Structures are given as C-alpha cells and as structure tokens.
Amino acid sequence: MLLMKKLTLSCNLIVLTALLSVNSPANTPGAPEISLAISTIVIGLIILLIIEFAIYKLLERKFKRRQQVLERIINKKNEDLVRINEKTEALLANVLPKNTADELMSKGKATKTKYNFVTVLFSDIQGFTQIAEEMNPEVLIDELDKFFFHFDSVVEKYRIEKIKTIGDAYMCAGGIPEKNRTNPVEVILAALEMQEYMKNLKEASLVQGIKYWDIRIGIHTGTVIAGVVGHKKLSYDIWGDTVNIASRMESSGDAGKINISGATFEFVKDFFICEYRGKMPVKYKGELDMYFVKEIIPELSDEKGFPNNRFRFKMQLIKLQDVEETVNKMIIDDAPPSLWFHNAQLAVSITSQAELLATAEGLPLEQYVNLKLASIFLMTGYMSDYNNPAEASCKLMDEMLPRYGFDEYYIVSARDLINNSFNGKHESDTDRILHDSRYDYLGRVDYIRLSEKLLKERNENGISTTPEEWSDIQKKLLTDHDFLTNTGKLLRSVPIEEQIAKLQEWHN
Image (cartoon, one colour):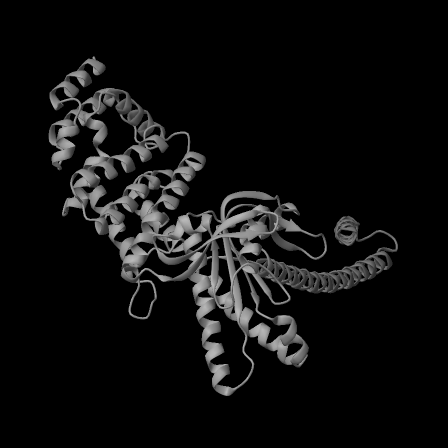
C-alpha cells in the first residue's frame, strides 16, 4: 500500500513538472538552463518511477509465491488432519460399535445404555492351563489367534458384537448396539458354526496324532448395561446379571457342547433341537434350567444341516417386527410438521389394515412378507420428497432392509408393490390388499376430518387447492373408487353416497 502511494505521488510530481515546463515563457532569462534542469528532473523521476514499479512487481511475485507455498502447506496439513481423523475413526470402529464411536468422536464421551433383550455368549478352551504349560508360547498364541480370527468372522456374519477376549475366553453379544428380536437365534447359529469349526480341527488333530483343542460355549438372554470404560485405553463392555449367568452357563457346560439357559431356550425352541439337562446348580444363582443345543430342527435345515429357506423365512417374519418398529419411530421423530395426513397414525393404520385383510383373504405367508414390507414403507417417501413419494419410499427401503438380512427377492417384490400402488396397478391379490389398506379411510366415519387434514397438508406442501377444487377432487375419488377385496367391501363403515353427502355439507 505504501509503495502504491509513492508511485501515485511520483506520477503527480511528473505531471506538475511537465505543466510548469510547458507554461514557462521561452524568452525568460536563463530559460534554456531551466528547461534543461526540468528535463533532467523529469527523466530522473521517470527512471525512479520505473525502478519503483519494477520493485513493486518483484515484491508482488514474491508475495504470490509465498502465498502459494503457505496454501500448499495449509492444504497438506488439512489433508494430514483428514487422514488422521479417518484413521482414528477406523481404529475406533474396530474396537467400538459404530454408534458409540460416532458419539465418542462428536461429544468426546459415550453414554451407557440399558438393553432389555440381549443374548451373551461365552466360550473358553477346555483344559487351556495344561495346554499352555506344554506348548511353545509362540505356537500357543498363533493357535489362539487363528481361532479368534475365525470367531470374529462368524459373529460379524450374524451382526453380533464382539465384546472382548481374556486369555482363552471369547465373549460376544447379540442385540447390541442395534436392538433386534432375532439375536437369540443368531447367537446360537454363530455358536454352532464355532462348534463345527473346532470339531473339524479336532478330527484333523486326531488323524495327525497331535493334541487337540476343545471349547465349551455358554449362552444366556436377558438385560445388560453397555458402554465405554477407560480414558486412555477405551474398551466397550457390558455388565449385569445376564453376563454373569452366561459365564456360569459356559463353566457348567461340557467340552464341545453349547449350554444354554432356560430363558434362551424359550426364544429358540422353534428353531433348534435342544436336550434338557434339568435344573443344574449355579454359583450364587441356585438351580437353573439348562439345555444342550443339538442341531437345527430337520424341517428347517438342508442336507448339510444349515438353515434352509423355511428357516430364513421364519426369521424374516420376526425381523418384520423390528423393521416396523424402526420405521414407525422414524416417522414419529423425523416427519415434518406439515404432514397432517401422511403421518404416523396413517402408517400404523395401513399396516394394521394390511395384516387384517391378508389374514381374512387367506394370503399365503410368502406373499405376506412382501405385503407387510410394502405397507410399512408405503408412506415414508412423503417425509423427504412430497412430489415423488414412491421413489423416495423405495430408496429408503433399499437402504434399510439389507441391514436386517432381507433377501433381494423380498426387497424387489415390495418395491414393485409400492410402485403399483402409486401407479394405480392392481395385478395381484397382494396389490389389491395394499390398495384397500391405503384407501381404507374413504369408508370410515372420520373421512371428512381426514380429508380436511389432507387438504391442509397439500396446501402447506406447495399444492395450492381451494375448498371448491378439493370438493370436486374428493367427489370424483369417491365415485371412481371401490374396494377390491371382499373383506375390504365388508369392512366399509359408510357407503359412498353418504360420504359424498357429508362432503357436500362440509363444502357448503
């Protein structure tokens, strides 16, 4: 800035000198000498101006180069910070559940949470102390690492949270941090895979004539408290009576077997064959019912003993409840206040009506899953894209359902039902049931009140409609509409003519 002022001053001085030179009379005594002096001064000033301008440009280039260097340093620092942050998040994700890691990163601490329905698994090596005394330490650690690495892959497969390992003990829990109703079954499926893995290793060891490893597994279902402990070395852990009983199930079991409590048995008895052991004494707990898990029920397993399609279908019927609960909570928490009609009450009404009509119409169970999924997500699109709700509903469904283990077949089928409903296509019994569930309000006694809410909602979401226009729209809808299932027609509370008459009274 100072240099620019100097340049401006120099320019003004040159101009002033030139003006004086022009205005000086030629016949003034000593004029040639004066003119020569003035010319010399002007030339000197011009040279000075040129030098100053050159210095200015040089400094400007240096400043830009320095600025570029600083920008590169800052960008590199920012990139380093991003990489460090990503590494920190990845590290936390490896040792903590994602929700807990996110909370820890954003708030600096994580709250402890109570879970009422969690299945805890404990396992340890039979006779590990003796094995450790006789085996080379490096080989011992390598073997343990191999076992636990496989166990980690198994629990990840079934959406189970690994809690920790202590020596030869391995602990994990289903139903945290995401709550679900299927965790007892999933934990036992994981236990069966662990058992099979160790059994194969045992058979291979016997053939080679070397010592083999065998494990005991104990499982119990109940309430736990989960959270992060420690300040420098963070650890995700669970506490409560459920953890203690699961540990007792393990210590009270037999080598190579899966010992479960009576509480867990009640949740899995429709999936697995279990051998009742009677009431067994448990330290500090008295006598508790215990069962050995033998295998999957034959009609639910394939020729290799793995879950078949019927098994998976039964699981998906249970998972439907988890999905419905999650979506309804999402609508209550996240729906904008302008959704006066397409709200949580309507969502519950549609799913309940779909379930009722499916039962009354004798819809096969395989189609019921598709119908239930479509009815759960049908109205969710209005929350994010009021003018294109079908696409938004399908997008949300595509994002959520894989996390719950639903097959692509069910996702595609439910997507087709939603699109057919919005496009007015009724190609199957399932389409017709979903249609009658969606428009059930047209035959209800509170139709006028609901119609007013829908009009208010449309106006607040940019679809300007006058009461006169709305009355005509609703008259046409009532006249053209008819329930497509016999049960839907029987359940109509108010005939079309009465609804039109009430609509006319409302308009007047």
